Length: 356
Image (tube, rainbow, N blue to C red; front, side, top):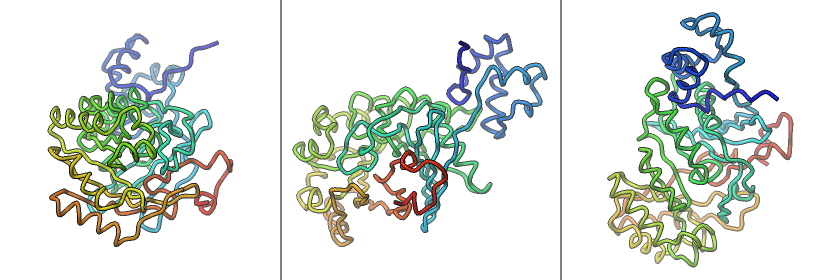
């Protein structure tokens, strides 16, 4: 049985360089290939005119350069776009493009499903089925960018989609290296944020990658965090916060703490005061995320007054606090709502079915 062809989008430029050399070609051909695909957007080898005709003829047998299949592209009333992609094995993932006044942020997935079992997250109801390859992550970026008007460019990338990024570190950080390569997309590492629910040993990998750190905090006592985020039983708050301090000491980069507000669960004045105490001494900001309800939710969303009161307590304590604007709720594209439904309804799906 023939060995499968290496997939182009799984390869860093040094890996592509070694592969090209093994085919008896000059190493600089990898530079040319990277430029054609990543800067010129050409994925047809025959159009790569500075390569020899012989090499162009052989490349389809040497490299797989196939894309993901875009199953659905929904647009919210607020401009948020959600993309459903089918992988080669038939699994599906979602990516979300979030527009704002000064940026377009792409939220990418790193896994199909998730192992972390956070009680408030819709994705967590779908157990881990697959860790994405670096290429499947990179292709989310490329295919969303291609779907946008020519004048619109993705300005930021956040690993906050389906899955726990630090549960798939090899492919996540390889994808970051590919996105950043100066011969290709040359995407700034400072515009990439990796979010974690608290896989402490891997947090140092974020520091080494040059990306920014976001931590999904969501509770201020180990007792509550154990209940709603089981990872806390292995890496409790004091261990997690020490890892954050180590990250800041190493990088001098501000940390984002994400805090999903669950009505009557973690939204008291005492909770706000404990956030201040836990993060004291860290350069950080708090992103308050009013819970986005979904079909299997056991929690409720606090009302606007309750959210603003929580913010005021934190601000009075001198903290930098933002309330994340809820976007894409009408297409289940808001924070905590991503979950592929395609497997239940194969074939072409209407927007109404995708919202169901």
